Length: 253
Image 1 (cartoon, rainbow, N blue to C red):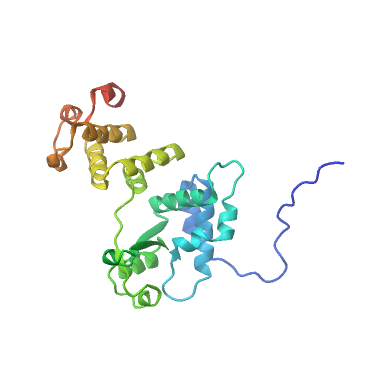
Image 2: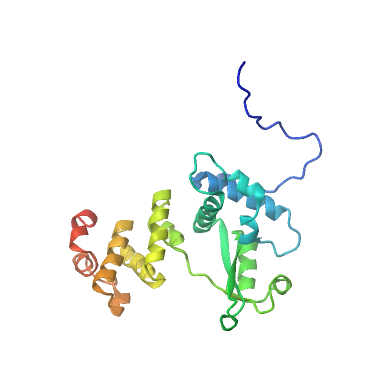
């Protein structure tokens, strides 16, 4: 006897189903850019969740996404060594870096009380989403008070390293994403921002270049005056100031 094959999709039911609105711009402009299956599944799931919401303030809470069994089940792949939660974290970073989702960090509690915590909220990057996010950041959206703890305060998040890379260097790959995460753990955010600025100013848009700049600062110390770096410096000066000798022929040769 032939072994039984797992049941596939049995088809949509005859009963009337609720439509989900997805902008045609998704298919013409965004879909061709998405090269990660988990990011694609997350993006479609976000459209579905937002379609289910009522009211003017439509957003997604990271905690609820991380507890969403349907979403996590869709992100479970036998070929993936990561947990569904790890896959989701990577997909959220990719969608935020790509600009599909707008991320807002909500700080709750107070440092003095010792109960400081934070939440991550996500908005779809539409005109309405951008306007809502701006109002939230300015504290002008009355509905916000209904869903936030009384002592909550908003923090405008600085661009994460994924966004810095895609905006200034190129498309993310899983290997590069891992290296960027290591970079965030190893160096202060200001150093990373400045290293990207130096790479762009010197027209050396490579992750190895940025890593070499950071490594030199870590080894030799960072001159606080380097915020002026790259403004008029020649390539030779950039090489001398920031690139360790052992990287020179690889990165700048």
